[in-house]
Length: 110
Length: 112
Figure 1 (spheres, one colour):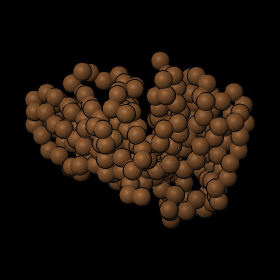
Figure 2 (cartoon, rainbow over the protein chains, first blue to last red):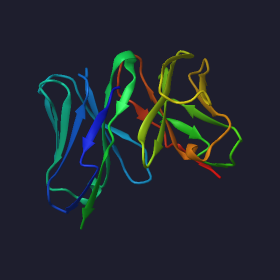
Figure 3 (cartoon, each protein chain N blue to C red):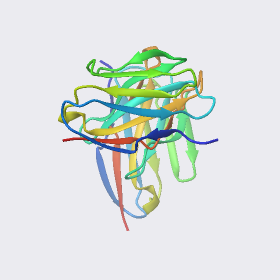
Figure 4 (tube, rainbow over the protein chains, first blue to last red):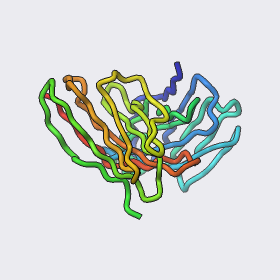
C-alpha cells in the first residue's frame, strides 16, 4: 500500500546548525505539503509544492519537490529554538485521501 | 475567520464504552477529515466527509464511524473502546478543490 516515509525520525541540533528532513513516497504525488506540529499542538500548514523539481523558500526554510514527484525535502538554515517541533510531509493519493509522512521530530539545543 | 474547533478537548473513558467527538470546520469549508495520532503510528487517516457523504475511508475497524451534518459539522464515534484507542484525534477542514488542510486542536482520548 501507499507509504510516505520520512528520515530521520528524530534530529537533535545545536542552535545555529542546519537541519534537513527527507520525505519519500512509494508512489507519485500530484503535490506535496509540509506541516509543522509544535509540542502539544496541532499540525499547521507550511507550504505546498506542485511542480516537478519545484523549490520554494520561506525565510530560513527551503522546500524541494523531486523531479519524479516521489520525494521532497525541507531544509532549515541556522536553526532557532522556535523551530522545535515535528515536521510532516503529506500528499494526496487516489481518491484524494491524504497520507502523512512518519514525521521528523526536531530538537534544538540552545 | 474562526479556526477549526473540536470538543471536548480531553476525555477519559473505560474499555467497552463508546465516545462521540465533535468537529466544527472553518466557515465555508465543506470537507472534514479525521485523523488519529499516536506516538507509535504517527498521523493515521480515519475518514473524510464532504457534503454529508463519506468520500474516503482509512484502514480502521468498523468501530470507528463518522457523519457530517448539513452545516458541515462532523462527529466521530468510537464504539466498544479498547486501550489502544487512546490517542489524539484531530479533525481538519479544507475548501472544496484545495488540498490545504486546517487542523483543529484535537481531542485527547484516554481509555482506561
